[in-house]
Image: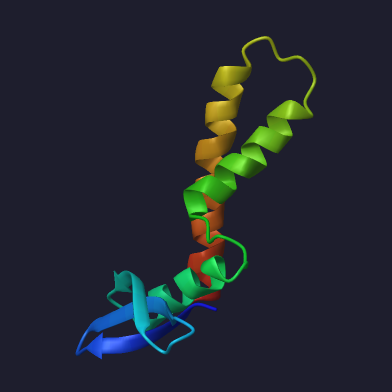
Amino acid sequence: MYVYKQSEANLYTVGFFTPDGNWASESDWDTPEAAAKRVNYLNGGDAPISLEKAALMIAQGLVANSPDWGEKDIHFQWIAVNSVKYAKAVIEEANK
């Protein structure tokens, strides 16, 4: 099982303990939140995705399920750009 520990003042190291008790490092992170996300992923959790990737996934689903637009690339780009703008607006509003 992967865990993280603070290895320096602003450094969090992800790794695991071997059966004989030795520490095996996997990666280093600047924040405990970033280290925790990596630990979650390594232990079988979902990989974190960026806002942009989430918006692209939404746009791909919309395009895949749309009628034949002819120029899907143009529509896909428009949907992707506006999905990112909408998602950022929602996050900003929620953080007020």
